[in-house]
Length: 206
Image 1 (cartoon, rainbow, N blue to C red):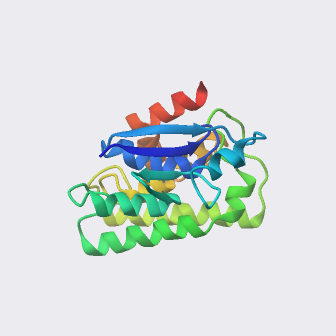
Image 2: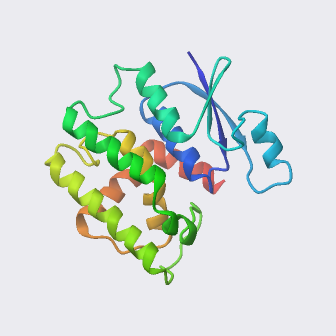
Image 3: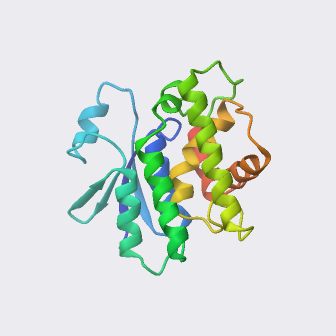
């Protein structure tokens, strides 16, 4: 099965990065349909693929799955041989929890530090809510890495859906030169060094 992923501009679409990174990192073949965001025709082009009017959308034959976490969960279900989630039940529960927290929260961070892969700038003044978001994310990363016990460089040791969910945050922290604690900086460096992440960033640059 070759999937089709409908995604937004790679420089700007954080939700698209999550789904794309999951497919690419686990070696699943897929075709891309890239829709440029913030253009007069953008909404009509997205609606041709998704009734929700948002990207990303994973197309599996006649089936369309939208929302990045739903896409990643669908892929995990369809490919149980691939380690989309940690093998350990407790780690898997924690990974799902922090992925859902990313999915539903951190609105101030999203608003005040939007994803822009090409931009490099200094950390702007942010609201107390955004600062709290940054602190909470670092606490999540620090705890996950401590519980992983050095089993690998990612949140739960090996790369998982949780890392795909936080990859756009890593990109934001690099863009805005956010000061990170050493364990969090090491984690961010590991995500940025992923070959798949480098491919995405090169495409965003172009």
